[in-house]
Image 1 (cartoon, one colour):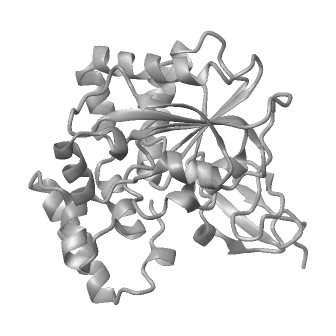
Image 2 (cartoon, one colour; image 1 turned 180 degrees about the vertical axis):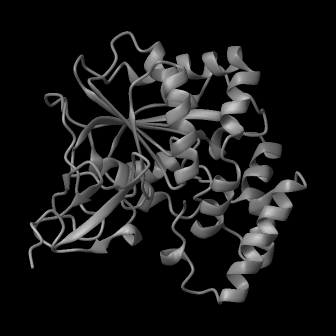
Length: 314
């Protein structure tokens, strides 16, 4: 399940149908579904709705890739774990943004010298989270996956010690300031961005990044936001030379660790209380459902249900 409503306001029913069917057809033919969407919509950047559809279409692909290339995946995860561990104290909390099918999150948890007390990951695709839960079980790792939007994370300010990404900001070219602002809001100690670095890439890689609408100027954007950038370089290991991975590490305070993240409504920023089948805001009456164990915490998942959790009598 993906939620499309908040992203389709500018599309008619016929246009939305054409986008869904066309992207699915492009994907099944082995073509770039995002490129198809940009051409259809007449846009140079990747729209949120196209990104959401593409991610759902890809569900299961990352697990298959991890199974097919275990050594490559292990190297990648160990590399990220070494970056994250520098900022993660024993008993702390960790969040991967755009966690997809948790193939990176599971590997990072496995490689960390001291695993966090709480590990979280979110993606805009319910299907990918569902595959991710299966992968976590297969790898004997513990983490909670939930559906959420990168630009409206359902966690309170400074709720998680370390927030990291693994090419999840990549398709959001033009929205760098909004993305970094939100990650910095949620992080307590550090944000570790593992993303393609346009400014450190060669001409061929830059041309490809521009064509696909990838992020740029992450370091400069962070500095404009007043961040301390303590690590900025290309990584030793990455798979695609035309998409060179780098690290941009943004350090915050060295405050005590957080072991219990605080959930908040992505619409109203009011506290959310979790139950087995929903997250609810006592202040506003908004409720967010849980589907097959996966919380749906995007803004348009909200249901106004003031009577939720209260006795219903004749």
